[in-house]
Length: 72
View 1 (cartoon, helix red, strand yellow):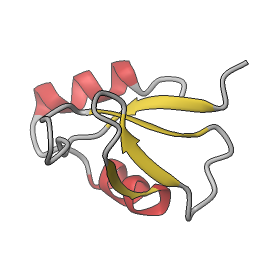
View 2 (cartoon, helix red, strand yellow):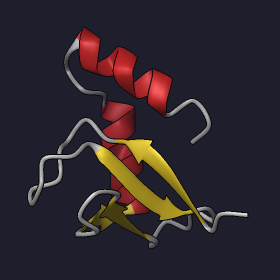
View 3 (tube, one colour):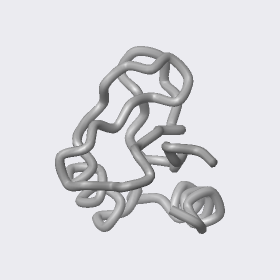
């Protein structure tokens, strides 16, 4: 059983450019979100939720996020 979940953010990691992020499966508001590729701290879960609700601004990015984030 995994203790973390991967999801896609419309904002890329500032270190490596990946959109794939990782958060604790508990998903408390203050849980840290890290890049799934380089493991850099990106933001807190409540901040990531705000970005996800706001959307990507592009239809193609939005479709990718919906596909990747189905279970998140």
